[in-house]
Amino acid sequence: MYGGFMYHYESDQGNLNIALLGDCILTRKLSVFRESRYLEMVNSIRKNDLVLANSEMLFHEYEGTPAWDHGGTHMASDPNNISELHWLGVSMISCANNHANDYGPRGVLDNISNLDKFNMPHAGTGRHLTEATSPTYLDTPRGRIALISVTATLPANGSYAGEPTSLDRGRPGANVLRHNIQYVVPKQDLYALQKISEGLGFEKGKKRLVVSRNPGLRTDDENNFQFLNTNFAPYPKFEFSNFTVGDEYKVITTPNVEDLNRNIKWIENAKHFADWVIVSIHVHDCGKEETDSPDFVKEFAHKAIDAGTDIFVSHGSHHSYQGSRGIELYNGKPIFHGLGGFITQSSVKWSPWDAYQRYGITDQINSTPSEFETRRSSIGREYDVDRIGMHGSSYVSMQWERKECVKILIHPVTTSSQNVSIFKDRSRGTQGRPMPAQGEIADDIINRIAEMSSEFDISIAKENDIGVINLNK
Image (cartoon, rainbow, N blue to C red; front, side, top):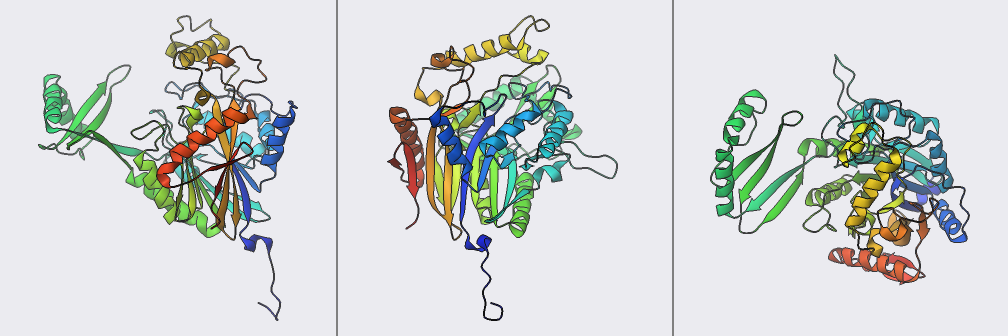
């Protein structure tokens, strides 16, 4: 109030429309196609104040060195394709995922440089850990939005961003949330593991590791045991599986405290500088069932919201329904436990030697990317029963009023994957490109998401091939 006059700012109203697209693997143009249903979907996406996508893709021109320990396909897309994301309406992207290091530190930096060149706000990777963890911001007429991007899934070697010191510049990479795993087994099984470990000589190896590199190794007792897993090819790699005694078989996961605290700190920072905070996490892990979000992600989601997050979104699980999982409401804030794949093109210009080797192609030197794609797709089809779930997905949009989420819409789509037999002979213009689902296919996708959301007491209605969650009570 000033001199009896109230200044009314649009951003003070707390109204916002947001679309979340999930995983986007983009290697070809989107803007050349003209089917009416497709363009209606694009226009519907563009109407939102913010459109967020997970870029499971690196935009570069092969300047970097391909990583040996990689995320599957070595991802590469022409930097000009960033303009295709702009055409679609994407206004912000997350970059922390298992493909962040496909072309090493140089690939991380080239991707960042190209995103900056094309004015695409991004988060999740950086020249060092602080930059990778810190948020990116987008100013809109309705408020300032912060994005923090995290990945819980990465190849083991070289993908983790590292902090600089007084003597080095740090390591480019992704913002990672590691997690601890504890396996609960009956006591007789624990005894069996101890006997196996002793017989294979692993106990001597554990003692050497305590002295040489891991003085903090937990001490075994009658109810707890660390089983040493060793892999000596091509270089010795030591990992521990933690077992404890219990009445039933169970897997307990908890977030790594250091990574959790670092991300919570930056979420609190983002809340200070923005009106809205979104946390995006890429995760392949699951709970007891493949459709369940793992416990460590649920814990992170709740703590992130307690720290100021408004929207928590997970993506990356490649089970049926392209990784879709349930929707939860925690303290009035939506948690999307799994958005599916929205764009799944993944055809690349070049594939490195390691990619051919991994999929059993013996002539790695003279093979072509088409042979790699054919081999990988055929393996995927071996596990496919041509069900809708292997190519049905969705994106979501939300309506916020006065800083309250009042409505969530689930938009079913089909993404014609080469991994599904019924699509293997379709034109390249269909493969990996989303199209609005209709009728029985739309119902099937919505019903499946409703089933997965029921554990969170979320009810989903259906209106004109769209799932509707009304939260305005």
